Length: 383
Image (cartoon, rainbow, N blue to C red):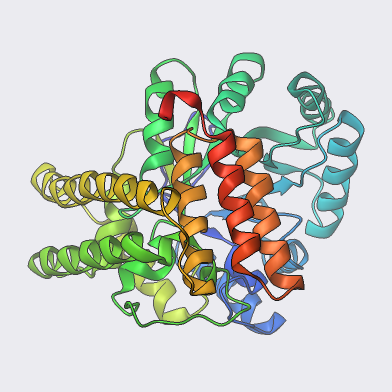
């Protein structure tokens, strides 16, 4: 059940990610329910558990739930956005206390800190390793140039990356680096945040508390292509007596460099369905069939997104505020994925959009200002 790893740790091919337990997807579980989920996952063979200091109280719950099996499991957590040496050490010590353990197996950079040199962050991680408070460290949501700098300068063991049948861009960035550096990829959102379940349609509406309400993956053509892939994997999976979600997890697990694929179901029945695939033997032909479905759809989607983006930026925004908002979110996602917009500016504009929407009655005039900023900062080679 263990995945191959440069870490020499018992990391299961499928891991459990605690993000959904924080309520990010709208499900509000009791502490007892969360504990039961984590213990069931462990009992069913999962040995790798991923959390973060920002995931509500999941560090405390995870540490308590697995206390009696600490030596048998691998736990990873993440530090927030302040990455000075002192902040790295203090944050880790707080996470250790929350988890009720004296070491973290993999401690990860969660997001970029634009105010701190990477060299200083690495000093903090190296000190934590020397003191035995962490075994390894890794990186997460970072632009490609920062990822390469960390790999060049540090002893990075893992890179956390979104990867699924409906989201390939980050894996495409990282795959060429696997031959240059010794790291493993921990894939997250491998079920496309539920897209592969077949239960999400064009008419699905998410609660305000559900992060998918603003997620570009659930907007416009990204959603349409996601649904298309789900339907095709469902059809192919019927031959092998597997669901679309199981096919999607299996596909990620078999990709080069992947050491664990994170799932995060909040229902026991979904957990059991996901885990069934852990020891599934796949054939070269099965993977090739999925490759053909997924890569063809992705190629078509990239072309469609390029056309959509051009139309959105070269004509007035829709008079429907929600549509205009969704259009700009999709533009930002596409531009950042393809390095057409500098990472820091893209993040700043996205945060500005979300913050304004949460605090004010959003207007077309404000959205036009955001659009102008995108056009102003897009790389000149794209004009």
